[in-house]
Amino acid sequence: MKKSHRWIPSVYRGITSSVYRGNAMSSVYRGTFSSVYGPFKTSQNSPPEDYIPRYTEEIAFPRYTEEVIPRYSSILGVEYTEENICSSVYRGNISSNPLSLGMCTLEKRGNLFILTLTGKNNINDEHTLSPARALSICAALAEAKSQAVDGSALITLAPGKFFCNGVDLKTITPASFAADVLHCVEHIKAVGAEMMALPMPTIAAVTGHISGSGALFAMLHDYVVMTSSKGVIYMSEMDIGMSLPDIGAALLRAKVGSASARRDLVLGTVKVRGEAAVSMGIVDRVYDSEEEVVGAAMRMGEEMGKKGWCGKAYGENRKLLYPEFCEMLGLKHQVVFPSKI
Image 1 (cartoon, rainbow, N blue to C red):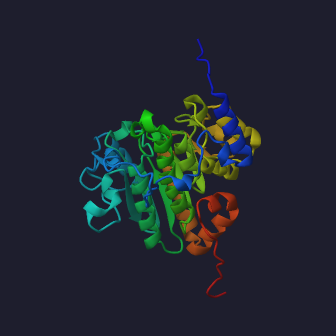
Image 2: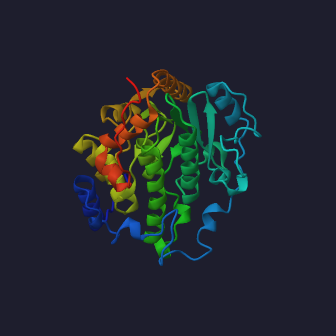
């Protein structure tokens, strides 16, 4: 028997309002995101001292099985081992660096930066967007930005069944559900700000499922390539019984041009596969295998790199394309002129 949906009417109305009008106050949460403790600030509503460590109690580098290492070695043409697969561009004090949380790695190959979401469960990791992972991603993006040159590009990878399975529900407690969710959203907003300000093209090589804020994370990239049959795009908010954060609705309005496509994604909770995602304008290209997806993303990055585009101009023009979304992230546009003609 097909499972019936028991959606909460107030949640449905809140999502409808935020997707079509951007009214954050129609959410089931009252108040503004900026009033909730974020990743880089505290307030009188900050959690107790033992609140954050539950996100970061596992701070060892991930361990990869023999199944994963050869596959990514062949795709990227690099001989990885369990010792060097977690090496990053960062060369500072590992203990003080968010990259040391073992949630992602950053590798530089020529002008290409390769961001890989990692985890302790090897290929079965869901790569959820916990605050710890969000901080790790922010650190990686900031490092890529600091080393970027004209012609740089970023490729994001994630091995296994899930590319990104959204907010980490294990970090959320029933007693403080709203505050915990908003805490996660603030961290995801930080990732969005770093990604949208990055002075280079960004490409997500989606080789697994993307769900909820995980789908939004993929959409933060300029280009998305995906497998044709393995993996679906799934906005799960209605099935969970919660409204979409205003920042997520703004991103959907910016990246998904069709109102009917947004309706099907958010209100209909339709699980979209690669070919359909191309038709809806969410994904740019689809390929049959993981290897083809990653290879295509790498080629796209290399081809864009050959153009030698001004990174600062690229980042500023991106902001101009999505003004509402970038304004919500607190990003300001700057005029860029060429140094010489």
